[in-house]
Length: 174
Image 1: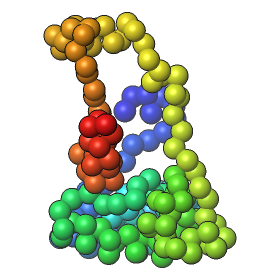
Image 2: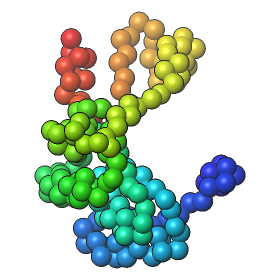
Image 3: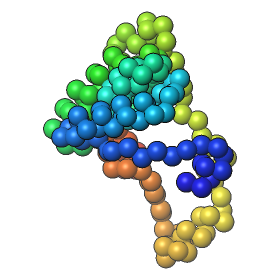
């Protein structure tokens, strides 16, 4: 929080969306945009972006949707619900952004490349932060009590279908 504020930005906390609070969620966003005029609203939360992007458009904002994944997390009902709301996101976004063509196809449909305001924005990371480092290796093995002769394979990530753990396990097996 303090770092963001020191850079001249503000933090606003609005209700977290669930289907039961749809109306109050939409009203909270309506009140927010009435008090805080913006030119552009950039939405990442696929399951609720269709709602707040619609409200943003009502208040004269241009809207962007941004998808990073090729699937939804959660159980069967949760995935069906997210699929329904993601369709609203596509309809409400003036600009369609995606980290890959696969992600774009997932959210925007097979004709996403024909949409004049579609942009691919690949995820970018500083790969040098993730290069092998012998000192980090030694420190982690020491912390975990694992000697140098033991094969150690790790993975950091949420356990959700879009992270493709089946493939990771197949790679580890090989």
